[in-house]
Every structure is written in structure tokens, then in C-alpha cells.
Amino acid sequence: MANYDVIIIGSGPGGYVCAIRCAQLGLKTACVEGRDTLGGTCLNVGCIPSKALLHASHQLHEAEHNFAKMGLKGKSPSVDWAQMQSYKDEVIGQNTKGIEFLFKKNKVDWIKGWARIPEPGAVEVGEETHTAKHIIIASGSAPATIPGVEIDENTVVSSTGALSLPKVPRKLAVIGAGVIGLELGSVYARLGAEVTVLEYLDQITPGMDTEVARSFRALLKKQGLDIITGAAVQGTEALKTKAKVAYTLRKDDSEHQLDADVVLVATGRKPFTDGLGLDGLGVEMTQRGQIATDARYKTSVDGIYAIGDVIEGPMLAHKAEDEGMALAEILAGQAGHVNYGVIPGVIYTHPEVASVGKTEDSLKEAGRAYKVGKFSFMGNGRAKANFAADGFVKILADAETDRILGAHIIGPAAGELIHEICVAMEFGAAAEDLARTCHAHPTYSEAVREAALACGDGPIHS
Image (cartoon, rainbow, N blue to C red):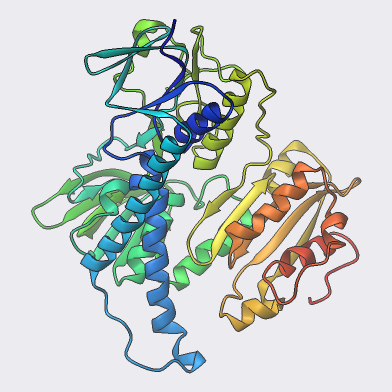
């Protein structure tokens, strides 16, 4: 008899959610985690701490730029970096302890240590071997780098090092204009750093709707981020107190050099499967180093499954969570399903940027007839009152059926507003369905309704 029905390797959002759902569905469950705390990259050195710093630095921005306009007079607050780090660590602690509590509540065993799979049905942790009918790999991802750039987590840092710098740098160079680079670049720009972002492609945030990306870049520039696109980084050199970044501009092959106190390497992430012993098991991998799975998350080896950042698809915590719940349901004999066409993406800068479904670029490429409904936050009463009127909502709908195909929001609380459209898409709603739904006034969400109205006879406030 196996010790467990399910052993999950990794306690990030995919792993811990899967573990809890498995236990709720009556499966005897254990989760292996080598860190001292649960929650994986997301809770310890990713989503949660970065949002804490984004929140703190945004409050500083509000105090410096908007308080006086509202009649809140007084000296602007100074930055106590050590205290801000303590606040961030406190937030991490509350969240990781919360997962520990949920494991105890749901009777999930936490096996502490790093896992290895010597054979199907067995998981080695230290000197102990545990057995299970099903093994789920949810080991997440690690920061990736590029040739010529070596991360030392001192002067040349990954997102992990960038969250815990000893002081706010005077000059910060960011390699990569994706989500991580722009969020952390925003944090340090608000705290007074001179931030330069180098991006290899000609557009920031690859894959984002082109119109939104253009507006986003203009707003970030207004906030003090210097963004250089078409920049091919050749290498970095870490000196005693600073670093140099060498890059060429792709348009003319001209060579340039950038001096910085700290270089943040934000060139994406790669699946983390080190030490699991997958080669010896014969687990099939994709060309990009991901674990190959079928539609039910099964690997090429019986009894071994994988979810989250180690398999194909966007490296998003909520995508991993959905896969974790779906797989738990499958193992418990239920249907288990993830709708990959309705997975939102959010960038937590200010303004926030959120998207779901198709972009205009992808619809044009597919030759699909569509219509666009757009509404600017300049026409939204609450946004104007809150100094948050930058940006717009854009809804893409099928030209004939009016069914919503995608949506893109740049503006206040975009990461919250996008979910109304996600729910609508899950139910196959038309833009008219959204337009005919009463929205409370005054709210930011009225901009979503107005964009839906713009897919028909036109918005009211534009």
C-alpha cells in the first residue's frame, strides 16, 4: 500500500492549491517543499513581496504628487528603506503562515526537504522514501538570463535580489521590458532611482495589444522610466561599486554603454526541475525545457503528472492554481478543466494593465472580422476625482455575433476590472450583455460598460 494517494512536489500557487483541493476531495495528500516556508516563489520572492513594494512606493507617489491638490498639506514623507523591507517581510510571513494553517486545516502533510523521484510511485526526501499512487510535479520556475550576463545577486541581480537590495540605487539598469522589469523598475523610479530599461524587441511587454503597449510606454516615460527598445545587450561587467552594461542598437548596430549601481536581469523565467531525476525516469521534455504533458497533465511516465510553470503555457500563478484544481478533480474521478482562452494577465504598475483573450494583432493575423469598443477613463467621473484618468478600456467582439473575444484595460484597478469580462467570456456573453448590465455609479467599472456600449450604438460619456 502507498503511503499517500498524492504527493505534490512544490508548494507554490500550483502545488499548494492542488494539495488543498486533493485533500478536500478525500485524497490522502502530502506536499514536499525544500524552503523553510510554504508558498513557493510567488509568496516568498515574487508576486506578494513585489506587490507590497509597489503599494508602498505608490503611496509615496500619491503623497508627493496628489496630496496637496486635495488639500492635504505638509512635508512629503521620507523613505525608510529598512522599515519598508520589514513591512514587505511581514506581508510575506503572514501569507506563508496562512498556507501552513490551511495545510493543517485540510490535513495535508508538509514533507520538508528537496524531492527526487527514483522511480514511479516513490519520492525521496533526504534519507526517507515516501510512496504515492500519483506524483505531481509543481516545482515552478527560476530566473533566466542571457549570454554574457552573469547574475551575482549583488550588483547584477534577478527579481529575487531586486526585492532585497541593501539600499535604493541611484541608477538602476533593467534588462527586459516585460512584467517583472517594469513593475520593479516602477518601484525604484518612485523611490528616486534613475531607471533605464533595455528591451531587445521594438515593443515593450511582448504579446500585449500594440495600442495598449504604446500608451503604456508613454505613461511610464512620463513617470521617469527611460525605455530603450531594439537594444541587444552584449554583456555586463560588475565592478566594485557599480556595473556596466554593453548593448548595441539593432537598427544601426551602434555600440553603447550604460553605467548603473545595480543591474536587474528581467529576461523571463525557465522551468525549475533540478534534482528531480527526470532524465533517469525517461520523462519526455519539450524543446523549450518544459515537461511534456497530455490534456490531463499526465507526463510520458505513468503515475507522474506536472502543472504550472514547468509545463507549456503562460508562467502565471493563477494559471498554475487552475491547473492544480483541475488535476485534483481529475484524480478524484471528476471532469477537471481549464479554459486557456480566458486566463487574464495583469501588470501591477500605476496605472495597471490587464488583458484577457485575443488581441487586435492576433485577430488580424487570423483574418477574423471583429469590432472594437473603446472608452477612455477621462470620461469616468470617479477616475477623474482620484487623479487616475489615464488609460482606457478596449473590448474586442465578433463582428457578426457580438460575442466578446478579448479585452484590454490600462487604467485604475485594471487587474480587478478585467474579471467582469472574464466571467462574461466564460458564459459566452456578447458585448451587448455587458452593456445592458447595470453598473453602480460612480465606479471605475462604468468604463467597462461604456466600452461595451461602444461596440454597439456608442458610449454615453464620450
